[in-house]
Length: 342
Image (cartoon, rainbow, N blue to C red; front, side, top):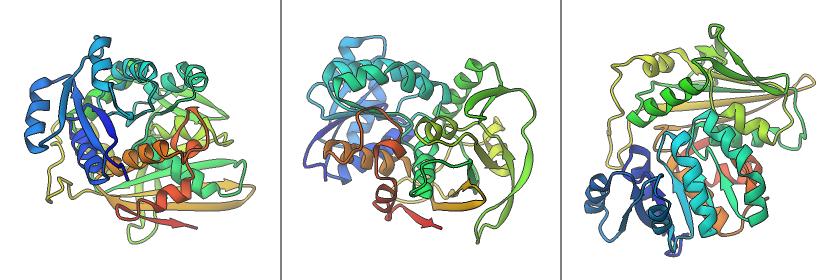
């Protein structure tokens, strides 16, 4: 448990940030509310009495230093991460504390893995990008499915979502990513990232029951094509998204998620089906749960707890599957998702 340790949440007043603040408090941490909108932070503080509010801007290093002062770690929930990740990481390095973010932006995650690896390793600190539903969960599942394999021929990560009501932050981050790659999609094949302007392939994915076979879009650009091959010897990493969820995301009039319970979760459900294959043998990991934004909170808070208690496998910049014991990590989330390893 957090034992009263202070953790700064940058982007605390956003949709995901609010879930993270609540989860930190539940786990015994003391969140510091930070971000770019002082008014929204003050509004959040009314519902979270007793918490310190420290507005900060990514173009004002002094304000970021103040936001991280005295904190044991920082969680960045503020997208687009192409704008926020580097400045907040720099502040974390100055403060000498771990940095964890929930970035689903492929390009931002590549930047973090590329630009900060040596400095973080030299400082003996930890930086974990994409510690969220997209990027982190798929990486943990793929790593758990691998088991004792040191390499595999291919990994497939299929997302079975009942629907996808994107937040304003998701839309903004997606727009930045598309602009950075010139509206091309990105895939990991033949051991490297590759850009393509071809149409997404349509196929059927055999999700486990009760969902069953569903129409999906293949090569749907997801953060898993960065996190999984960053540490696993798999030359082919393919990602898939159910057609209904992809349509929701692309439609401009799809509403933001709405709460249906006292914890603020939506009614949306998910099933993440991961298959790894090696020389004709197949292994599988399946996770089921509810609300892709809400599940990010226990993922990222569990990560921070493990970092601060020394339950990590490396230092520097590392994805979830590399730095944590993946099966043990996933089992620790049993209150939030169900897990099957086959």
